[in-house]
Length: 170
Image (cartoon, rainbow, N blue to C red; front, side, top):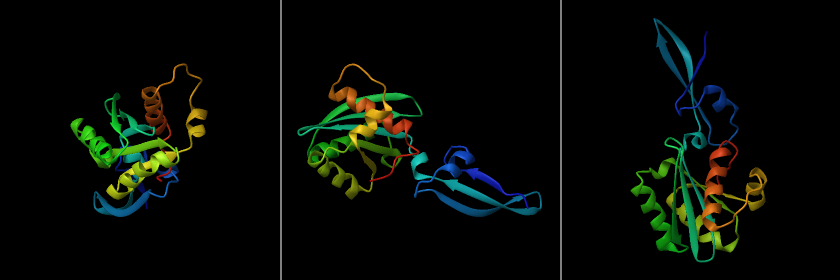
């Protein structure tokens, strides 16, 4: 029998099958082509289905956020306070840009105590996020001049987009 593999997340079946993340699912079903039933495998991966990436540069008082929208190749920047109201404001900003929270992968540098409350908020809301060591992000970037919280947020969002297949949810 012929086995066909169909991607339901917009990526090629080969890309999905090579993904080794724990969120990948292989769902067997049967399709009818002509009169003979054939096995068909639907492959989906939570990582690959994310189409929006938010890079967050964390400091003691503020969170600098950059939203990278893969589909439109747009980047938006916004800054919120590093507190519960600020976390809610992140969700409001994303909704204002017509972004579904289910389509977002949040990525931030592991900064110790300043990022714990942010991570707990994402965990409570059931949002997908990763806390990545700063050196890992810096290793993937070429030497670049200029450093600011805004630029760092853009770089983290770009890192998440470029390395989506390797990121592990925290």
